[in-house]
Length: 465
Image 1 (cartoon, rainbow, N blue to C red):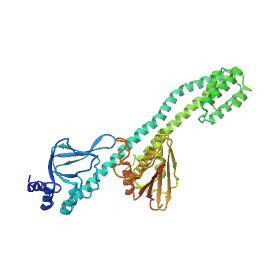
Image 2 (image 1 turned 90 degrees about the vertical axis):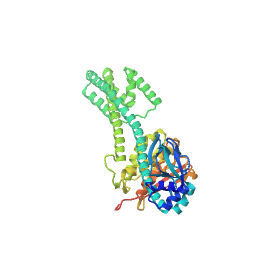
Image 3 (image 1 turned 120 degrees about the horizontal axis):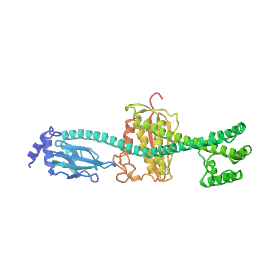
Image 4 (image 1 turned 30 degrees about the vertical axis):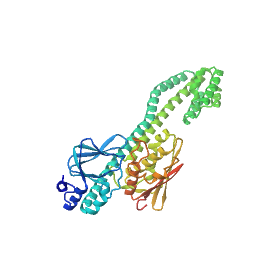
């Protein structure tokens, strides 16, 4: 095909066809026309983009893997342009570009782009607009995908965290029926033992004192075994079945209290009274465990609701930074425990609010704290602090991991840059953080050395605070 014939085809191109004829002829003279067949790979995420692609016919798409398998994020058809655009700083694309159907492409090599900018100003202006639109589409897709991935990870962690208290509540609820039956049987036996009113008051006082100290016992296995042995020996001396020692050992009743009770209650009455106390305590302990488990579930659900603001449409408002950080710490507590990382939160409750979108501000905290937990070693520490500095709120997230190597420190906020293994990181987390902070007129920076990495986020306080 001659240069004139190719220029004629370019004149019919939807994107650049309205450019001056001389510019189209320059492109025809310096470009290479080729046909790419279906399933042919035009470029991959691991190689430098070779040049500008002008599609005359056909269709091709870019597929990006952000941790959940490859997914099409954009496609180009006849009349579109793709690849490296003028003034773009792109070196490697975010994914693999693959031909969907037979496609005629005019390729302007990377080395010719400076000359294109000089010789084809109107085409260049058109392509800059195309690059702006493409960046906007990728930004929107990136943010949506990162939020989806973050929510997926959050949901998985939440399911794991909710499973423990939910299972405990179900288990203890099933045990509660048997414990209540045992308490009723013990009460009937006590009533039939001939106990006097003064004796009953003494017994009830002892039971009440044990109920008032309903806190988990801190006996280790050896100490508990020793306590059972001591109570068992005391029961034998008082002619009571020593098997009751196991039930009494879990209560806070002291040996002195038992001895005092034995001074006024004897034989069957003493045994019935002790069984009643042990059964009552066991039933109340199960109720308390169920309350704690369900409270934990409520706390987790409330944290998710507050973190995502799922009951409200996104809007600019005054954002409570301490609350958002506390909700983030609650949601990531399980992840930190799984890695034996201590997550410390030291944030004053009287920090002034900032102005922004709550769900997006919380996304900043989630990404930074989550990354810090990943970076911290087993049995390491992540410290989150916040303070007011002038007209801004400054949040610091510090971990004691191995640090960020100097050679990659300038790239950590680049989109798609990640040091994690394939499928473990999207390379979007810090890029999303940077974009959200910039949108909120703030800034973020990092200091890192082996054993200490600190991310600092500065966001302006809301006007009038």
